[in-house]
Image 1 (cartoon, rainbow, N blue to C red):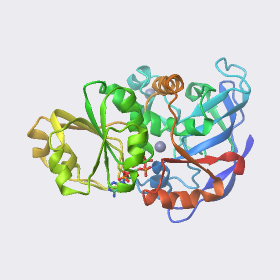
Image 2 (cartoon, rainbow, N blue to C red; image 1 turned 45 degrees about the horizontal axis):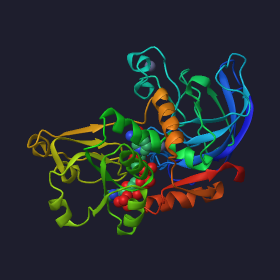
Image 3 (cartoon, rainbow, N blue to C red; image 1 turned 90 degrees about the vertical axis):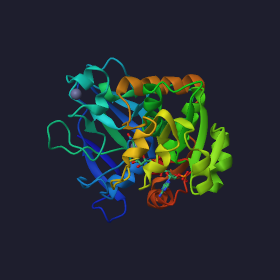
Image 4 (cartoon, rainbow, N blue to C red; image 1 turned 60 degrees about the horizontal axis):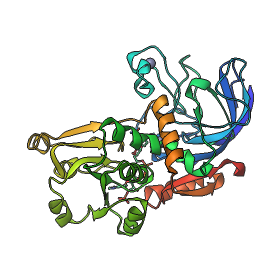
Length: 346
Ligand code: NAP
Ligand code: ZN
Ligand code: ZN
């Protein structure tokens, strides 16, 4: 076994506190690496606070993990000691179902999450990246090029792939009008990717203070969703809206901003259900859809794309002792645009 330390929550009401635990010994196909940086995703907060229910405690959150390989198992061919590597939201899946065969491991019914999940034995809990060491099967370890700042790469493993994957799935590009709803971790990556893919990008935000940043990130237009006249102006305007909002909101308002055949792509995961009026969909043959992270091959494709086009997340690097304060700031929308924990401070 490998001794590891990190920060954990012990129940849905408590703060993150220092925590010691064991990682499995490096198996023949495992990669053991030392974590350098881990991003703080809003999903960490939803799960730490049991907002999606079914949380497993103690929980070490974190699924935007980058580090350097310490040791590889005897059968590992793809990685060697010293390599820069990453792990996102998944650490295992069945490899045999239709989804796995198509590289859609995120939709495998036996997929194992990086934390708040059980290994395929059905009993061993997984612990995430707010920690110093991790051991992962090589099939779920990604290569990281060394031309980008490592702290800016970490959020690509969730915020990056979660926005890259639907934009690719719906073939978003030149000639499309895309709205990005919510300028946080996912939202800022959606703006970067959609503009890199050639679409006209409009930021839809509740925060007037984020307008200048949105434009710097690549948005062509900025509208406050809190102003009634804007929702009228934008009626029928977009081909796609990527909805990254973490809290309950009115989907009908944004469906009406879609053109004929437009798609509202939900990636944000508010914990409570919302009402959809059928006429929001019927009147212009609109759709509402969802998308979850991305498969392993697509995550590697996204990392390689970011390396070629110099795309990283805009981050605020924090010591791990600040993580509880970071959670409170995220909940207030005060994030520019991802907190990333420097694990050398553990
Ligand atoms: P985040 O950094 O907190 O950003 C969310 C943004 O939503 C905020 O910055 C804010 O933007 C807007 N917002 C927050 N509360 C709002 C409210 N009450 N009304 C309207 N807008 C509000 O969160 P994130 O890490 O990007 O994650 C966003 C959501 O995606 C979370 O629910 C998370 O669990 C989910 N997620 C899903 C996947 C997936 O696979 N589908 C992957 C990762 C995360 P403005 O200030 O611009 O309004
Ligand atoms: Zn995430
Ligand atoms: Zn599978």
